[in-house]
Image (cartoon, rainbow, N blue to C red; front, top):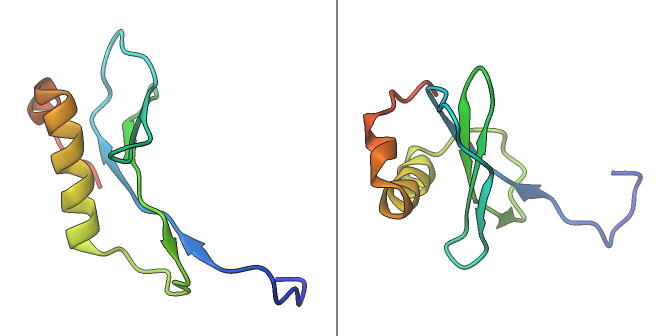
Length: 83
């Protein structure tokens, strides 16, 4: 990017669940995990993969995201996974 050799690529992945009503943003840097409710979906994220240039979804990373989210909020298991 901009031919800056000091920059490194970082890939982040997310899962989308059905929208939740009356919920707020959650962030836990230790897991890592973040949950962001939107009207159309609930975003589950928390990956940070340095040096990855491929733009592909890794199922094992998504499974880990969901496991962390379910541990923090077991009720999320009731939500359908959209992506």
